[in-house]
Length: 91
Length: 541
Image (cartoon, rainbow over all chains, first blue to last red; front, top):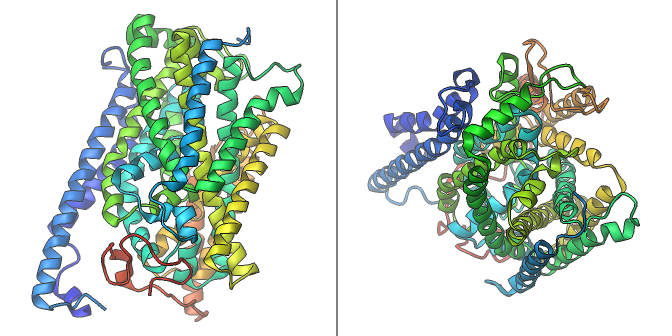
C-alpha cells in the first residue's frame, strides 16, 4: 500500500485550494491593521465590528467549500485506489 | 441594584431550572446501552449525531462565563474585548485540519482522553501524565468561573444577599444549584448536559435575538449607542491616566489583539471538555460537518459582545463589570423576560460545568488512576472512579469560589489558558508526525509552563500587583502580546531543538501503537465500531 502513495501526488491543485480556504481567515483576522477603524459604519455599527462579524459567515462558507472539495478528493482517491489495487487499503 | 427580590424573574428562573433538572435525571435513559463502561457514562456511548454534537459543543464552548465576561470586557475597555470574535472565527478552520484525525485514532484504539492518545502515540506515561495534569489544572478554575456566572445572575435577581447577610443564606441558592447539577451528572453522565444543551442554546438564541432588536430600539438605534460609548471611552480613567478605551484598537494594541485571538484559538480544543464533546460524536463526518455549522455560535457571540456597548449607552453603572449584562437585562426587559434571560445564563453555566467535570474525571481515571494506581482496573471500576471524581472536582470548584476572592478564580482561569496551550505540540504535533521525541516534548512543555506562569505573575494592573492581565512584551519583538502564545513559541523551539539533539544522541524512542491508517479510519471500517465499542481498555485491535 505504500506504492499507491507514490503513485498519487500528495500536493494537488484541489488540495492547494483547500489549504487556501482554510488559511484565508487567519490572514484576514490576524492583520488587525486592515480593519482597525471606525468608518465606514453600517447601520451605526463601526467598521471594526461589522467587518469582523461579516467574516463569520465568510469563513464558514470557506470551510464548507474546503469540506466539499475534501470529500470529492477523498472519493476520487478511494475510487482510483480500489480500481488499481483492489482491497489494498485494508489491513 | 440589590433593592429586593425580583419575584416574577425569579419564578421564571426557577421554572426553567426545575425543567432542566428533570431532564438531567431522565437523560440517563436516553439511548442507553446495557453496559457500564466509561464510554457509556463519560462519552455518551460515542453515539451522538451532527445536531446533538452541535448543541453539545456549542453548549460546552460558549459558557455562562463567556456570556458575562465578553460583554463585560467590552463594557470596560471597548474594542480590545472584541478579540473573542476573531478567536472563534479561527477555531473552526483550525480544528477542521486535526480533529477528524484525533476522532479516528481515538475510535480505533478506544481512547477516551487526549492523554490516552499521547501515551499510545509516544509510548510515554510521563508525557501523558503531564498532559493529564495540565488538563485537570486548567479545567478546575474554568468550572469555578461557571459558578461566578450563576452568582452574577443571582445577585442581580436579589437572591445573592448583600455583604452583611449570613454566608449560608447568601450561598444557599448556589449550593442548591450545584448539588442538583452534581446529582444528575453522577447518574446520567454526558447524556445529561447533551440533553440540557438543547434548552440552553434555544433560550440563549431567543434572548440574543430579542436583545439585539429590542434594546437598540429602546436606546434610539446603534448610532446613538456607539456615540455614547465613544464619549464614555474617551474620558480619562483616573487610575491609569489614559482614556478608558476605544471603539477601534490603536496601533500598539493590535499585536495584543491578534496574538490573543490566535493563542486562544489554538488553546480552545486542547481543553479536555472540548475533546470529550468531540469524541462523543458518532462518526468522523459529524466532526467535519460541525466545523461548518458551529460558526453560527460566533455570530451570536459577536452580537452578545455588542450588548457591552448597550450597557454603557443605557447608563448601567456597576462597579463589578461582571454584573453589567445581567443588570442591563433587568433594566431593559419586562420582569418575565428578564427571568428567561437569567435562566439562559444560569443553565448556560450548568452544561459546561457538567462536561468539564466529566472531562477532568476521565483524565484522572484513565491517565492517573489506571496508569499509575490500579493498572488492572475493569471498565466498571473505571466508571465508578470517574463518577466519584466528577463529584470531587465540583466540590473543589465550589469551595474555591466560596472561600476565595473571585479574582483568584479569574487569575487561575487566565493561567489555565496559558497552560493548556502548552499541550498543543504533543497532541496536534503527534497527530501528524512521529518525528518529535517524547522527552523533547516533555521539556518543551515544562519550559512553556514555567515561562507562562512567571510572565503572568509579573503582570501588574492598577488593581492587582500580579496576574493583572494576560499580555506582556514579547521578548525580541518588543510588542505587547499574549503570554500564552509567546510561551507556546518557546515551547515549540525547545521541542524542535531537543528533538534534533536526542535523535542525534540516539535516545530511545517510545513504542507507537498507532498505524498511519488509524488516523483516517471512519465508523464502519474494520476494527472501528459503528456505535458502541464493547469496552474501553485496550479495545480496538
